Amino acid sequence: MYAVIKTGGKQYRVSAGEKLKVEQIPADIGATITFSEVLAVGAGADVVFGAPLVAGAKVDATVIEHGKGDKVRIFKMRRRKHYRKSQGHRQGYTEVQFSAIYGADGKELAKAEAAASN
Image (tube, rainbow, N blue to C red; front, side, top):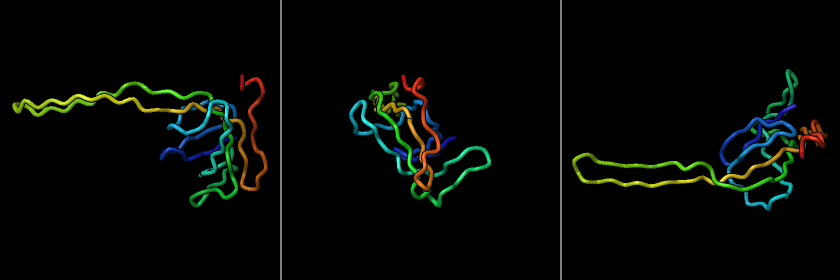
């Protein structure tokens, strides 16, 4: 069972019990958050696609940690003009673990096992 969610301007295919680093979300560590922008939900041939969202579907997740990604170096140069500019950037992320997937009717379709959350 999986779902395709949209967060931070990106789309992710997630399943219950999976850990994922997404764009930074303002939530405390250990808090439960709900992703309500679900684009598709199902498994195998039983997939429900939204137009654009699946009404009533949601995915619950727990915030594990916040952090910063690897440094990206930005370097600009104009040859023979004595122009050089160097800059760095580290994008913030939030690591979440998905605990449950709910279908369009609000029924729980998949739940993470207790052993997977440790």
